[in-house]
Amino acid sequence: QVQLVESGGGLVQPGGSLRLSCVASGRDFSRNTMAWYRQAPGKQRELVARIVSTGGTNYADSVKGRFAISRDNAKNTVYLQMNSLKPEDTAVYYCNVPYFDGGNWSDYWGQGTQVTVSS
Image 1 (tube, one colour):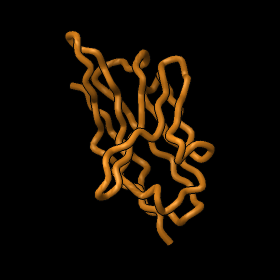
Image 2: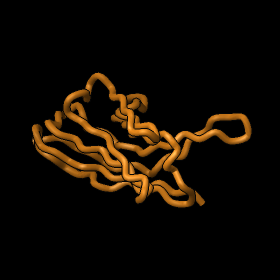
Image 3: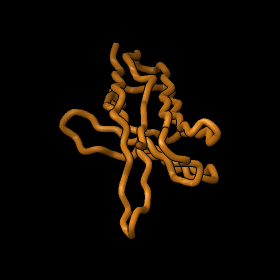
Image 4: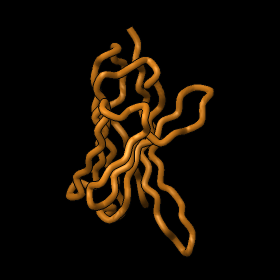
């Protein structure tokens, strides 16, 4: 059974930093793209950052230069280093792994971790 478990969220002051982790279990994800999404209250879930199996990355414009996604394939883990946090970064952050199954794309999701940026 596949599980994605996020950790590292919390309350931080504006300008602070947090590092999120997502540990995947149940199968080897070293060849999968892994991503972080977030959802703020009253808003749609949005892509924050994505990393492909070879290490290439892309980011939402709102986090470029502040956030960094990385992965450790040996640990089946993806990270999100968040620096210079702003109140508008407040959201539930979700780990995501898309996969191709039987001719269709689907997604594994974690349960989410709350990030609150407030003074």
